[in-house]
Length: 74
Image 1 (cartoon, rainbow, N blue to C red):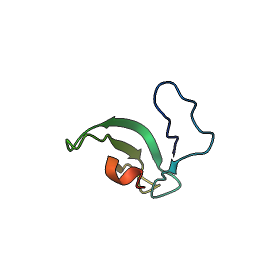
Image 2 (spheres, one colour; image 1 turned 135 degrees about the horizontal axis):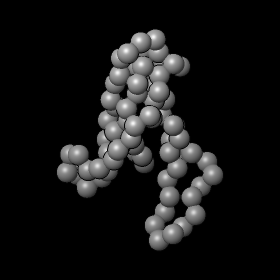
Image 3 (cartoon, rainbow, N blue to C red; image 1 turned 60 degrees about the vertical axis):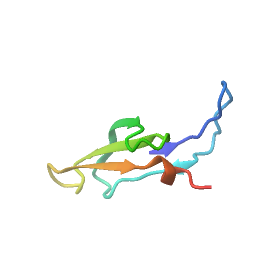
Image 4 (cartoon, one colour; image 1 turned 30 degrees about the horizontal axis):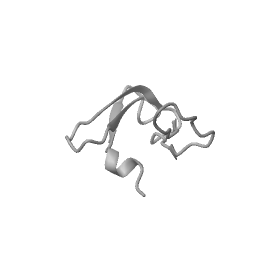
């Protein structure tokens, strides 16, 4: 999954991904479900990513939480 950081007030997004996230196996469905919100109250949004078939072979799933402060470190 590629994330493109944008500016404020209608600025144009970059054509280069700011960050790329991947699942743990090639057979998973990483990013099949997504949500975002400020989960820890620090004013920065967190990204929550679901991955069905996390092990690539069977009926296992996983949830990954990426904290806003860690997503785009300066």
